[in-house]
Length: 390
Ligand code: PLP
Image 1 (cartoon, rainbow, N blue to C red):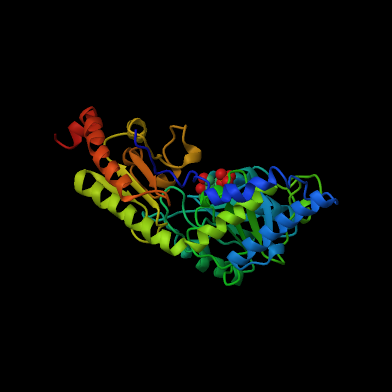
Image 2 (image 1 turned 30 degrees about the vertical axis):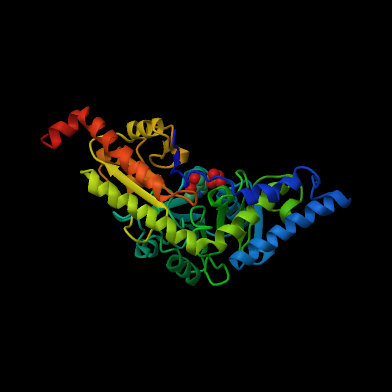
């Protein structure tokens, strides 16, 4: 059976060149980067070369990058580590209502521990109004954390404008850029962002490895305790193959960003145009233009996303409803909820997230398979027959 993977915001396949770059560090060069002998030295060199490479690709200084186990850990470290190191500063964080749980749950956790949090609203396109941020600041605000691009809708946030504002108020600005790194141009030397989280598996690198960028001068403390790795900020033996693979994946993604981005955008728009032409009662969730090139979130009215996902899966097509991390839960998407999408429509939302491996034939296949599935499910839906007068 033909298979079509359209769930790249959940995770991506690893580039073959990345696997190739990683393999020697499982075999021949297996050393612990903290060991003094030659095996350790080789591993250390690989770690530091990778740090240099990533820093150059993002225009950061190598010493501003700290390797972690991925996006979730980077977000935890940025926010909790900031508060741990800045006890003399205000205890208020501003974030948004559409963050990934890796930020939302950190904020809820710190709220139970003597801190306060404000969750900024978004408009119907899933975008924050920077004026809301200005209104939310109090004399106690010491950190702002707003995501770069949303994982469910792809909507891109006015991060630079908000970071500039934060800087003018002497407030530290963190962004969860897990869905942006490798897809959107990022120049850490030119931005007012102080901390940024990234995860390799979202840009065709291995799972379980990521980094957090912490601008020189931003005070941060470790949140896990152990050895002196990563300049006392993140203890634990470095994941050498993962770090090497991440650097290689970023190099390829950044190098091909423009070309791949344009190609994927064409396919995404072909999919949306095809859906609109072939299926009625559908609408786009997210910003029409200002969103990541690969993301298309569509509500199919009168039916539930779970049935669509399962039916597409039977035809070899992989998509998701809401965020990958929240899948398995029947909860409606908090992102679509914050955008004011009617809960009945939010329940029929499907996220198609395209990637480098997709072709025109893939999209044609989806456009052939999807309409009869929707038709069949709607025929079984009592709300469809009632509401649409069919
Ligand atoms: N932040 C965002 C925006 C994400 O999309 C994800 C993963 O889906 C994460 C954080 C978590 O990253 P990781 O899977 O590397 O922990």
